[in-house]
Each structure stands twice: as structure tokens, then as C-alpha cells.
Image (cartoon, rainbow, N blue to C red; front, side):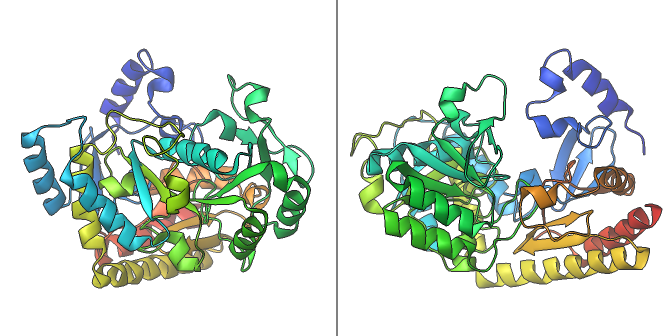
Length: 427
């Protein structure tokens, strides 16, 4: 498979941008080699600048549940663009999208549009602090909530730990208010709240960890988060930037039957365009300016193009048949990948929630960041490049989730499973 044009573009890109990319994982550092430069996409496929075709399981990191360039979304976007790309003023479209989101997420009584998942989590934490008049935040190792200074934290030693900066440029003082705990460790969580509850404003969690592959919550973990936060008057924030509309129409909170106080959403509510939102209980959200004293603003919040694409996307997702079809395709892929690994004699662990999934190259059960790191990275690298050579595009990291869309056909899945068997066999 030729990649000469991609290589040429990468050489030019590294002279203009840090690492030649605008987001770190795109640089392929975790798998070696240089990134592919994409020219266009349609349905379940993406096409690089060299003309190579790939079945896409990245889907812009999750939000393209309908697939690429879905016709009705594209048609609506064209009409919206002709009316103007940004107003910096209210539109009826914002009200329509807010209503669709509220219908899917009953826990959201009021909502505020922002421009990214990072903005959503940052803003949700601010309003939680304003509501509780407390400062500390509890997060879980392996959960990524955007590049907010106070959340770029690695766990230190011990069950309940005040962490260390996970990035240069983040002062220790910024994360002194952040407590990092192991995901799925209910005992450590309960002990931490018992000791520090009067300082803790909120607990933020990816209910299914999509930024460490696909780590599922243990049976009682999310229930414990809900019960303990209610006991101590702490705000529970579900970061559903990845799981919202992806795990189920009503996100992980519908899937697992847990009602958080605040919810953060991302690109899916804009049909893959840059957008985000946070919302929840009316008494909390009423503190957001101009109604209350918690300041947050954004010139492009509720952008008419993103909102238009979101409305068209959510209308389709609201149809019951959509998720029945997605579940059928995902089960087909899951069964096929498990069977391919078994026939090839390769030990892997496969996990999925709704239509997000991950295959870990380990024999250990993956329940948190520590067990995820038992994966054989070298095997994954070989697997990744073998899949690329066979026209299958997966995330260039062992620790990122995969996704499926309405556009993926039985033929796509069968080709993927066949490619996976060949890739496993080479290991």
C-alpha cells in the first residue's frame, strides 16, 4: 500500500505544527511510523491522499454514529451555511437541539451549549464548585476529561492520592485540589469521601472509560458513586462526551440506570462538528450566568452549523430501529473478532458497551488503568499495521476505543474479521 503523498505531507507538516499534527494521538507515536493524511470520507470508509480506502472504526473518535457525510446531515448543513455560519446571537435551532437532548437525557433539566468536550467538563466542575461552595474534585485514573489543567493528573501511590501533574506547564498548585482514585475501586472511593467529603465539590467519571480502551464499570461501582455522593451532598458528573448516544440513546446513564447531577456531552450532539454541552439539575444549572453567579461564555456556543447537524443526527438516532441495527452489527463484529483471535491462538480480552469496544492484547481482566497496562504494546503495533495494510482503519493506540456506525455493512464486517484473523495469525 503506497503512502508517498502522506509521507510528503507529514514532512511539510512537522515544519509548521508541533509533531506535524493538531492533536497528539494523530501522530502515530504509539504505533511507530507516520500518520495517514485523509482526503475524504463517505459512509463507513475514509480515503487517504494516496487513494487508499479504509473501513473506518475511529469515526472521528466516536461521534459519527451515522457514518461519514450522511446525506440528510450534509443537505441540512449546506442550507444552514447559506443562511450564515455564525451569528453570536440566539437561534430557534438551539432550543430545538436542547429539547432533543433533554428528551434523551431526562437528568438534564437545563443545558448550556459550549464548543468542545473540554469546555463542557471544565464548566461543569466550575458550576459544581459554585453550587457546593467546596473546592476539591475526585477523578479516576485512566479517565480523560479534556486538557483542563486541574484534570491532567496521574495517580501517585496509595488508594486515595493527591496526584502529580500529567503534563509540563501544569503547576502543582492547580492539581492540589484534585484527588485521583483507581477506577472500579469502590472501597477506596468510599474511604476517600468519608475522610474528605466536606472539601469535595464533585466527582467526575467516564461511566465507561473510553480513553483507556473500553473499561466497563463493575456491577456496583456506578451505584456506589451515586449513593455516596448523595449522602455527602457532592455533585456527581457523568462525562458522556464519548458514551452519550453511543452506549445507548440516553448514554451510559440509561444503559446502567444511574442518574447523575450533571452530564457532559461532546461532538455527537453536533453530528461530529465542534460542539459540546453540559447540563443537569435545574437548581445547579440556574447558577450559570446570566441567571446566576458562575461565569461561562462562548462566542460560537450554539453555532448554527453544528446545531443543525446535531438536530438531523439526533432525529435519526431517536428512531428505535437505529439502535437495533447498530446492536446487530456490533454483535456480528464482536463475535467475529473473538472467533478470529481464538482460531489464530492469540490471547486477547474483548470488551464493549453498546457500540464502543476494545481488544486488549492481554490475558488479564481489564478493570482499571493498571490492568489495561498489562497489554502487549508490541503485539498491538504489529496488529495495527497489518490491519492498515488490509484496508482497516483502527485507532493508532492500544488505549483508545473503537466504534461502529449505521453505515457499516455485513460485507464491511466480514472483511474486517478476515483481516483481523490474518493480523492475529501473523503474531
